[in-house]
Length: 409
Image 1 (tube, rainbow, N blue to C red):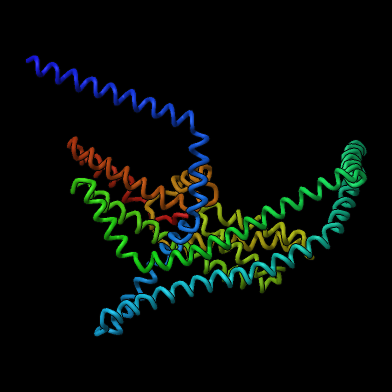
Image 2: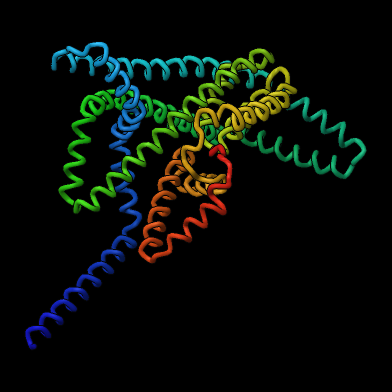
């Protein structure tokens, strides 16, 4: 009896010590949160090429798998050495296709951006003068508003004159502009460096993807019990299908939208048709808000161009194009890949977009789809455990099965 009491007190002591240690660990993490965040950011910056490579390899893996199967069907009697050569050929073809797409996008974008920038610089003074004259005409019958506007414009003009007249201020302004341009140039070069290293890393990841998969499975079943390992493996496969299906479908859908936009803007005679189409196609990958994110800067670009009314025609064209995409093209390609309603799509985009910016907006829908599936499975398991399966059946009959299939954008 005494031995049992001693064992009980030992367990209570160990539990209390564990709780105290956990509490101190939480306090330390909260106290050192800035340093920990800086350390994580440093590690993240160092591993950026590997993250680029993992993303490229993940997007190209389905293509490599399909080409592997096709090459093996074409050469059923290939030796082991020849099979390795065929696998390397499929990786090479996938990498070449990806690099070609990136290079074509850069070739299309950079000249258009340069020409548009030069045009804006040349035409901006005339546009400002025209706007000033239009405001004067509008305010002719409103002397009080005109006096406020003249006072405001005179303050701006005097401020600019002060900056231009003071050499030190002028030098500081020029130095700030030069520093900003330098920082932006370094960031662009860093992105190109990470992309180049990412493609190299992607080759190694694609070549060893089956080996890494087998190692991950060994690690999973070596750490967790069989039951939990099977559950985790099933959820990982579901996550892979969710993300892969969504991204591949979105990329195809965005490419089609970009081509249609290029044809439409070319026929309508808009300036920088290729650049606008690339922007619309790329931003279309972002669900729900993507069309607006891409259309607003393009409309501003057209507004400052030779024909300002083209901005209005462009917005009308984009609205029509997005309706066609949302009701015809998107459902044919994507279908109901995520199983998430429109409300939760909007909620996930706002949530993860607020947390992680543009990247969060891109991955929001499939990520929330995975979370939604985990919650659904936990609820189903709990209902079965509590002998309440009829509640789920009633819910499906009254709500889920009656709702039509929706486009999850």
